[in-house]
Length: 489
Image 1 (cartoon, rainbow, N blue to C red):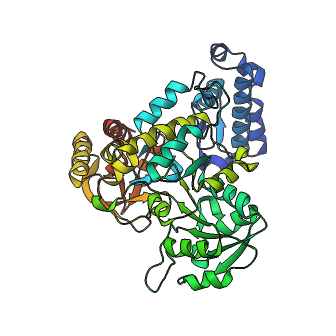
Image 2: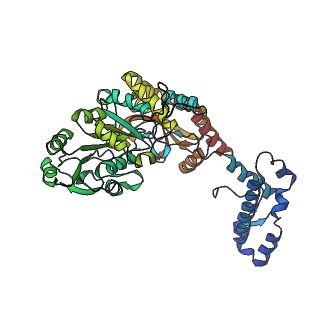
């Protein structure tokens, strides 16, 4: 709201500010109409069916107050009622626009936390639409007519895909880790390598999550090197869990050593201590055959014998925000019965989207074709080149006002996943002649729908890897309107 321009025909003359003293400003202030006069004007009365009187009145008060402050600062030298009415219309237009809206992601960051992370597969979105306005069998067993459990909807799917004995889902992975620690290690020691005490998004840190779960942190090894003997020496009578955390948002390279999951599982078995692994992002397919690096998969952890594995639903899995807990049935049953499980359970929309997304994994080719995160991560250079050239060709008519090129750049997976992976991509770079790159960026973010790109080397980049095909002409229209409109202005 504060970025909106002053209203209508209000005259500003900052060069004459010093010429306006207290008396002149008071005279202008006296010209301001009352709130009642404004909201009962013919022009505003026409909006009665569109906005409530309270919203209209609040808008009028805001406009009057902002105008009053501008007068006192010497920014306004003359006003009339039309200026104020224009301000009210502007406020109401902003009030009526949705706060949550579709955004075109031209950044090249596939799992963009600020832009909603993983875009859902079309089938998942269709499923949400179908079930959202009707009753559903969320906690009702249709076979026996008795009460069911919402986790049953996706438990069998998760187990079939991963080979786990049992599973459940909560609202995000941080909640999953917190719930596991609360149910399995409250008041007990949890042994973890110093190199795995990570901080995830939003400044949430593993030690703090452990503290909230009532566990006692026991650090072993060093930041760059931890051996199995470090864990073994730390095991005591009060050890509750051996915890392994995948450092999904950074890598330690060079002089480093990490204990494998299999080693930790073998140690846990010998001492009768459950082993828990937090994979963070988590992935259900192998990306290496498609040209990407290795990322520890969920099935790898299950096959290694992990008692409990946790991971996210809205990162490399490509589904909705969720925290997935898989593992041995005896521990899953204990976790399900913990009081915190109800506080962090997922809703019907998340379940619908997760079920639809998981079904796509029964055929790997289908998963890579229909799950946007996987499709974008493995998009061929030929496809990227085609899309970039299509956008550039649509912008031929702005060449007098901007330099437009296709260039080689690099995309990122994002979302704290595969941090060292750089994906060669193609971008459309725009260097406007009639405005700054920052101004172009600002104008495109204010477009409907907003377009978010990135600025580099005094150019505005649209990375086509994260742009859907039907968004290409929308971007072209927006860029033309902003740049040619800027020339006309």
